[in-house]
Image 1 (cartoon, helix red, strand yellow):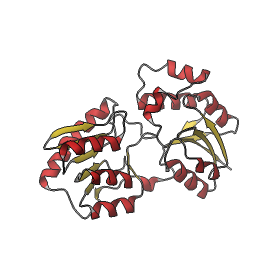
Image 2 (cartoon, rainbow, N blue to C red):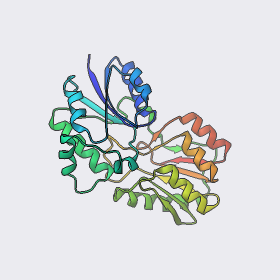
Image 3 (cartoon, one colour):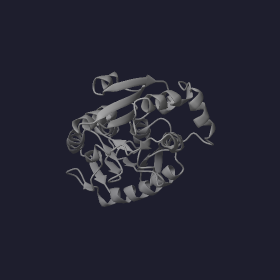
Image 4 (cartoon, rainbow, N blue to C red):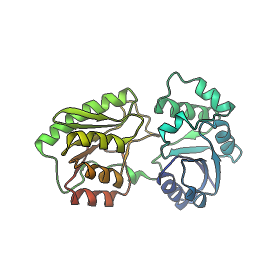
Length: 266
């Protein structure tokens, strides 16, 4: 039976991946991160190894000793923890030593390259869950107004430039003014910060980075995104079709409809 390696971060995404892989009759060998990965993952996989952030040697050993040839990465790592909880092993130090900057994509690409040097191929995080990718079009009952469409265009341009610099995926705009850009704090706090400045009708734009490696670190939205937007009375969420993960899609759209929020995937 083919074995699929799962490098698991936080949230439900690793659990969804494990379920989907198992339904296909494959074995799941997981490497989970202490303090990040949900403990429920252990009951959904065939084998699991728990490591600390930066322990690449342990990760590699877990896969190679079990004959894993294909791995995928699912779930985020809390960025702030990279300043406090990283305790690399010797192999981890070697990988980190090759990095000139510690941007998300640089770190993930370095890990992928090291795995592939060892004969382990990194596949896309949506290989077994393509249905999570955002379809194209307006997903809600309400479509953006002409003014909101102009705001989306402006925010899209800014977000792509933000992504080109590998800083973040999300911006919040109002009246063609940038109110908040995503950095290490994450999307939810960015929306809250920008929405509070806008007072109401903020437009949230979240896109894929121009140089994004589509195997990992795709932007993601879900039910909680709309909950956060609703607390600051934001009016529009614009995402990139085919390159954005949507979790709890039906519940997310239902909540958006009940709050008059337009969701556009383009």
